[in-house]
Amino acid sequence: MAPRSDADWLDAAAALAGRARPLSRPNPGVGAIVVAKGRVIARGWTHAGGRPHAEAVALAAAGEAARGATLYVTLEPCAHRSLRGPSCTSLVIASGIARAVVGCEDPDPRTAGTGIAALREAGITVEVLPRAAARASLVGYLMRASAGRPHLTLKLATSLDGCIALADGTSKWITGPEARAHAHLERACADAILVGGGTLRADSPMLDVRLAGLEHRSPRRFVLTRGNVPEGWAAVSDLKAPAAFGDAQYLMVEGGAGAGAAFLRADLVDRLLLYRAPIVIGGGRPSVGDIGLTSLDPAHGLWRMTQTRRLGSDHLEVYERTR
Image 1 (cartoon, rainbow, N blue to C red):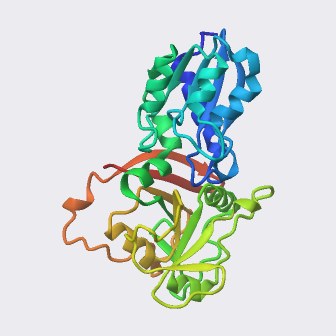
Image 2 (cartoon, rainbow, N blue to C red):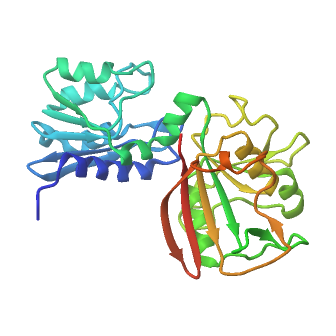
Image 3 (cartoon, rainbow, N blue to C red):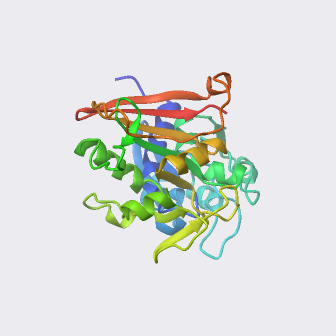
């Protein structure tokens, strides 16, 4: 087997970062791996509540074996002081790490390049290796840093002819158990979930995670409305309000043609999850309402398919917004 490259190890760290999402908020979910002589010495990811950081976990596990090793980390180690613990930059320097490979510079102004600079000043070789996997693992954190909002996924479960329900609103179940389980896994990766007011009133959805062992990852529930909402829900009336979703980094929009249309019309959807069942409804309720198009030209070139797979008898397509 050929030796693993820096890109391979950094992609592996990005995969570890997925274990931190979304419980690490308000901190980013980071992955870190310590490698010596082509072997993994230790690994870590950001823990719930944001501490300890991925580097702290990995370096503590590595101990003295970290001396002379390489640290692969998806995000630049933090350099600012905190009452919750020492900076990761100081921990890396004290560990004896000889080399660090970083997947993404930290946009947090408290670090923003100073972490990398401090490591280099301490004699550690630092390479910044931009990787799509590293950025993808941090996309919610990066979106909040750049745009002040969470990364938004719109989930649609439709028939082949694009309907989400019969004309009378019946929608249980369009997709099969495998697709529904996958959707619950997606919920577990979000820290906020939203439906429209009509969906809340008609269906009283739970919006929880019903997968064994992941129930504690049920996201916070929001509803797009100007009216009152039940206990345990939060109302959102202005999609673009900076504080609309608190410190959430990952928002999933699940219900209602109107809610989906509102976010699409505002160009706030970053990712589409399209579950399609092999059924034709005809005359049913459309998956998305009017988004303001007056011609087809502006609709082209906005979405790029990044994944497709079978889920039982259903088909999943994932699209990313090209920006």
